[in-house]
Every structure is written in structure tokens, then in C-alpha cells.
Length: 283
Image (tube, rainbow, N blue to C red; front, side, top):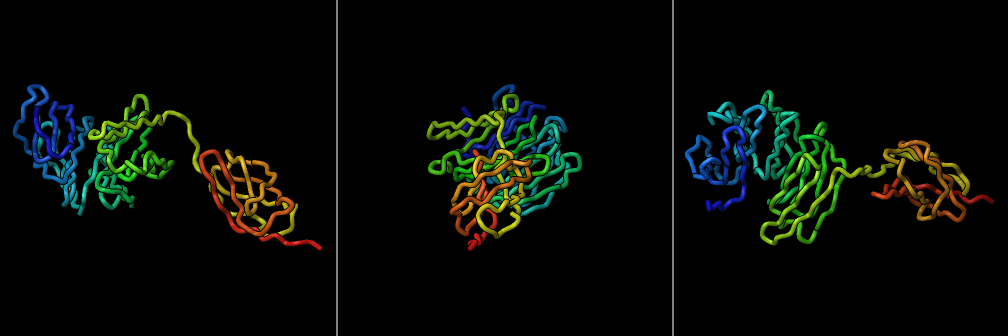
């Protein structure tokens, strides 16, 4: 048994070495601690790209890139960081670093930052990637899981997995072969399993409604996105007859008895609130 006070570990499949917190490196062939060129001081996170044969070490003052075979320093990407986790897409050759302020993405071909975005997260936040679908999974440490499209780094779904105990999850692992995601609490012995291979739809959005005033019976065109799964349209809470024209348009009729208030569309995976429709009384 080899004591590891931090908990972070990364496998270098090129040399069969395992990198732990506080500078410990284990030879996977002998299971012995061995000397290394890498200085892994806490807090830091390590990711290995076996395809490009590079090691990425994210620390408080930047990201160091090493040769995965010789462990010689290749380059440094200066950055002020409070690193939480790191994930390497072996296929796209992109390295994603989760920092206290958000997400940082590095092009592994040129070793330059190609994207950064703000994401609220706590000290126990975790990150992983699916090499097949290129989706990124960000568990914020407070019970919220964000699924991002790893090609454009946009959130495609947000899941609440356990707001009460979410901060206690200290490990996140993706099985790229099955697209299953495992959220693990090693202290409490609990595991959440999410099947991301199951089809899902994005939440509906409303961009506009036209017209935004009129009497009952007025036909209103609602434009937006992801409207093809809408099951209910209301005018200030009053259900309306509607027709789905496309994923970006719905035609609805203002119901009798409706009062002035927002237009709302509801789907199985969420709802969207649009502009206020003003009901005009007829004489």
C-alpha cells in the first residue's frame, strides 16, 4: 500500500507510470515509488495524452507540458490558476483544465489556449471527457452536472444529481465505450451512474412572439429553439391550442378567458418563458 494524501492520480500508459499528489510517481510494473522529473505540488492536476505522448501538469502559475517518455519539460503556458481537475480528449488532442474560475482548453498540437469560459464551481468540482462523443462533463461540487459539447464548449444539458450531498463526490469517471458517467463518493460509498447514451433533447427556448397583444382568438407565432418537443402552451397560465410548425416555430391561439401575462411553453425536459401577451377586451 502506498499512502496518497491528496487523491489525484493520472496514468501514463506510455511508460506505465502513475502520478500522485505531492510528487509521488509509481512504476506500474514494480508498484514502487520512483524518481521523476515532474514536481507535482498540491494543488495541481495531471493529465496524460498517450497519442501525442505528452504530460500536462496544471499548477497555480500555469500549465507545464512534458514529454511522456523522458519527462523533460517541453513548454510552459503561463496562467494564474487554482486547478480543480483536468481531462484529455485523446482523439481531438485537446486538454481541458477546470479551474476555480472556469474552463480552459488547450490545443495539444500547438500547446496554446484556444478557449476559456467561466463556470461556477467549488473545491471538489470534477471534470472528465468522452473520447468518442467529445462531450465534457463538469460536476460543480454542489450537486449540478453540466454536459458540454466538446467541439464548441457550449452547455447542452444541465442535470441536478444530488444537491444535498453533491459536494461530497470526489471522483468522476466516464466510460467512453458505453457513454456512462460515474459520480463516486469514496468516503460515503455512494455512486451515481448516468447513461449519456440515452437520447435527450435540449430545453426549449423562446426568442419572440408575434403579435404581443390582441383579443382571445388571436393567432400568435412563437419563434425560438428546440420547440419540437413542446407539449403545452399557456397564456398567463391558461392552456392554449397550438401547432408545432418546426423546431423553431409554434403557432398558438389565445384561449378564451386568458388574461395579460407571459407566454410559456413546456416540454418534457423543461419550460421557457416568453414575452408578456396583453389581452385586449372586445366590446
